[in-house]
Amino acid sequence: MTESQDRRGRALSSLLNLLPSVLFGVVLPFVTYGMLTDRGYAPVTALLLASLWPVADLVLYLAVKRRVDEFGLMMLVLLLLGALGALVFDSPRLFFVKDAAITGLLGLTFLGSLALSRPIMFYLGRKFATDGTPESLAYWNGLWQYPGFRRTQYLLTGVWGGAFLLEAIVGVPLAYVLPTQAMLLVGNVLPIVVVAALITWTIFMAKRGRARMAAARSQ
Picture (tube, rainbow, N blue to C red):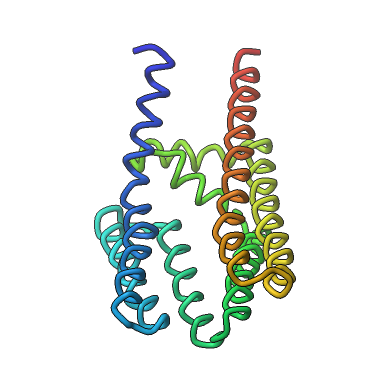
């Protein structure tokens, strides 16, 4: 097997490993929330019921893998924060402020993890960059011994946290300046743009890091 085929195989395995988390943490909650609110359920009730999907994902993952799924846990926290926000904020303007507040809390969570022994992007990277096998997890965990890898994880965490915090800071005044219909569009598009930019930058940083490690091994 060539190196390129091996990389494609690892990428496919990582994608397949990611699909259940995306399904239970993003797709099914979104669909469930829409179906329930269309049938007259209150937003809080709909969000709480939708959060049962990532709970199920966490339980299944723990039963199979014997460890917690960090991505599923993050999706569950976001859904519960959304339910709390829907309970507190009941006007259109405050609804958008609530979304910005949740994004800001997410950013603070990322930044706060910089004080931990390993920042949050290390765990999210392990979720997305491995295929979940003991060998790939052990390899990822072993990378922590390299100073360059550690610096990259802290840098990624800081940039993601700062970007989410900046998005929240921009979103609050926009909620009061823009008309509701325009803010609805901005509120849906802005997070996609921010996350897409962060993912693109993260992929670039990962490729550069792999190139540096390959160059170091060849010396």
